[in-house]
Length: 271
Ligand SMILES: [Zn+2]
Ligand SMILES: [Zn+2]
Image 1 (tube, helix red, strand yellow):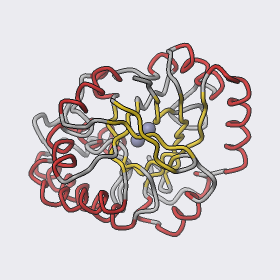
Image 2: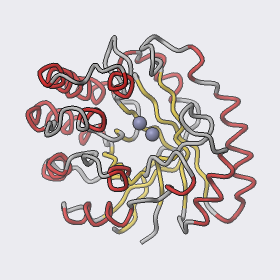
Image 3: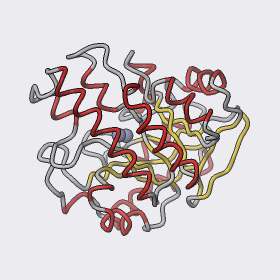
């Protein structure tokens, strides 16, 4: 099968040092058929949780992308996406950003309303208490329902993200106690044609799978068919990493095709 990495960062994102053109060439070297750059735009800053007016500069992004696409030339199909965070806290801002001519929009919940990114919460020692973590995970589930009802994006990124930072501090927690909330969120996603991402970073980092396998199964059982693969690579050597494991996992959960987005329209390929 062809591999399309639809979740890749470049130096446009604060947490990546490699220029987009270099990432695109690395994706070609890795034998991928296409790469979609989905640099961060967290409407609320990951450290402060406050609204971040500098999170999006469309013109600058587009210029970097056009340059990368030109340099990669015919070696790989290079597409332009975005990973938007805090979209459900600021629906109007999100809608405006998402209308800026992308091939793909991933919406991710990196932070809850009024709080910084889960990454920051972990660093600040605010994920060390089990009961508090369970409360945060419930809110995380509820925000996914809110996000799904809002819509306006193509894919939900890495469901289970907080577990990346909770697991090393308080092991053994899961989103499964909030299955009913997620079932409703997934139903709404299916109804609206919103895809579920299997974020393969979990395979290389030995972390909790994003999403956890029960959630992948639930999406399929509810009739969901739209799934994407994304490595969430922040460095060139990780583009496409974990895709063999990811494709196996999707097949094992009853999915028969992979979805890719061009000009925000889904296309399908056999798994
Ligand atoms: Zn993310
Ligand atoms: Zn990402």
